[in-house]
Every structure is written in C-alpha cells, then in structure tokens.
Image 1 (cartoon, rainbow, N blue to C red):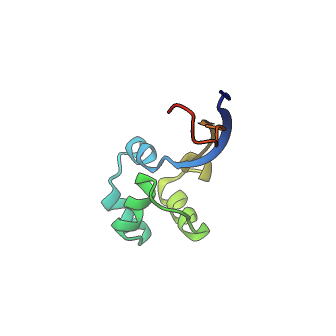
Image 2 (tube, rainbow, N blue to C red):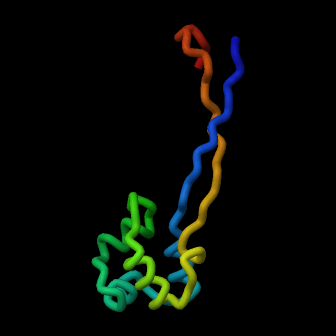
Amino acid sequence: MTSPSVQDEPTVTVTLDKVLRDRGMTLTELSQRVGITMANLSNLKTGRARAIRFSTLQALCRELNCQPGDLLLYARTTTPVDSDTSGTGDA
C-alpha cells in the first residue's frame, strides 16, 4: 500500500463580499456605479468567474476605494493525491 502524496493547488479567491460589507455598499449599488452587470459582479463575488479584466478591477478599486489586494486573496492549498494507480487500493 502506498501513501498518498500531496499536491499544491494555488487558488485565487475574490473577497468582494467582505469589501462590500466593510463599505456598507450593496452589489446593486456597486453595479450602478461601475457599469458592470449584476450577473457579472455576482459571478465574481461567488467565485464562479474564471478571469477579471484590468479595467474591471480598476473600476472596482476606484468605487470601493481599495487596492487590488483587498479584492483578491491568493493561497496555496494542499490536496491529498492517491498515488495508488493499480486500481486495487481501498478508497
């Protein structure tokens, strides 16, 4: 039996909800101020967005009076990876 190895999975998390809460601003208000649809902001807020344009990041920072690092959090997470590829290992 082999022991599982560990794989680093870098992740970027959007902390828009925290910044909005700290500023006492709603997603609707931010949407109106920056001219970005509620759907796109919601995707950012919930982590479903796969990318963000610099122009969007700049608009968010301008209206929220924050830095990009206030909106984005980078972390490395470790996930066990089963190295037993024989198909006979216990799950």
